[in-house]
Image (tube, rainbow, N blue to C red):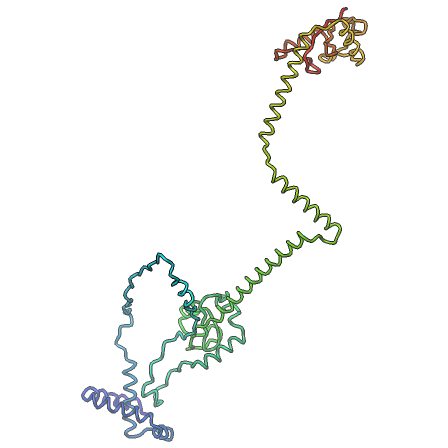
Length: 401
């Protein structure tokens, strides 16, 4: 290897050589790359370090490496986004007559595209001549499919996709899942947020730097299987519960108490069906009752009026008085004061004032004080006079003193 001063001197000479003789510079570069790929050159480089002409070749390789890494683009300027031209919407014409083409399309329908795994890291640049010669350290090469498969197997053995994400502590579900080259698994959004927060690219679990990322779908597959299992379990439980309820409704149990409840429920269900089958017109039924009550009242009123118009004979008054005596009523039902001796036909009472009140006998065999009955008749609102006790029409007769 050359000293720093010699390297700068060689680089300066090479820059001048490249400016004045560009075609010769490209020829030397191609020759060096071809010689480096030759097996004899590899055996020689392994046995001894480059000398003489190899020094110039190494200087050219270093210059080529520096020119490849040199970028004149403004890092703060955002690249222009070029969007594809918008496609014109096409209207699907509907056939008036069913030609059967839709059925053929359904048969030839494309199957759903399977989710494929892909690497998120951009492809690295091809190695320069200096990196191939070992003068400059080459970057880490991307993992092959076999290596990614082994890394994925290590993650699946630990059940990382089944467990929640180590950053947000939530299940992966249908969100994008990222597998690192260190076999750890995270949400893609969580990992990107972690990188923005820390400002460097390190694994949140093992702190490995400069890792490679690959999108996998193990968590989404497990989530779909888990959801399908739960749906099937719920559906099977519903089917079994429905079958069991129908069995309980048709087959009576052997326990006497449960058998009694079973037949009670059956009888109740039959009664409910019968009640629902009938046409229950409650308002019409009540109106019929009101009409029948009104007709009955009109009949009774006619009978009372006819009985009031008919005169009562002395014999009938004697019978009425006899019935009143049989009840042994000694007080007036209105004022609750003692009556006279009805059987003797007078109205004598025993009171502190030694006063006497006239009694009256009604055709309904009830006896009152005359003053009490007259007061009741004055206070009554109806046109027809009714007995205060039996509420029927009457004829009255004042008892002789």
